[in-house]
Image 1: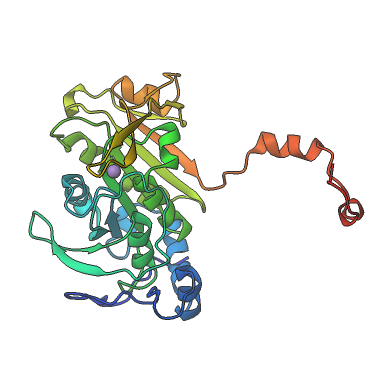
Image 2: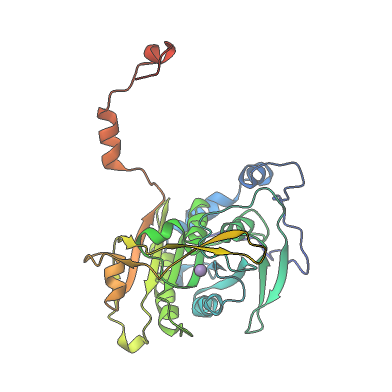
Length: 325
Ligand code: MN
């Protein structure tokens, strides 16, 4: 396998830019289908090559890293992630315009997407999209930028994404979208604290990103990183973990708006979790950085075996009228 392919001089859009291939007004089709038809089909091999991973010194050119998040383009965590990964490669930032926390893997399909050129707080060029984290990653892989990416890095999120959180998390979903596009992907989140310092999380992100670039990931895999809210000197190091179980303490608040109409707000204190050794939750509450492998194959293996033992009607039974029981 050759090195990661990249096109010379990717297109750098300026100002209000037309998103390619995903404009819902141009006859509606799911973006992935549209792009698959439009793309010359030269992206997958390029990324598959990078998935294998190799020492950074052996890369023919610097890795190209897509930086995104779910907290929005103005998040300090996004800037911290970009600055942490700059020594590893060429970073390109495309992130949601507004805070998209807990939107999960939402993909915008019923309206067009607008992309704006932005400046981050360090003066560097970036782009924002008025959509979800998944939209941002989709745009990047469907041709908004020429060429492809060697790594997707999502974060640094304000607040941990542990255990069941990943089913809600826009941060993790952005990495999942990278994985679906066959690109090695990592999500980085930091346990919430007021006025966070991203020093430790930035170091953790760079270490994990380097590992992923050098070792590669298999198809369907991504890495979820959670960093405790601690200064680097107080952290207990890395722990490779499995997903833990969250305990949510959600409460339904019913209030009345100024016109006398009730509304509802899902609130409550932050979630806790089961502190079982070996889990991401246990690692983070004990001051360690949790590195959790995630696979997009959500098949329940044990349930698969059980389901096969249940009594399923034959095709002939199905064809007969009745309640199916
Ligand atoms: Mn968030």
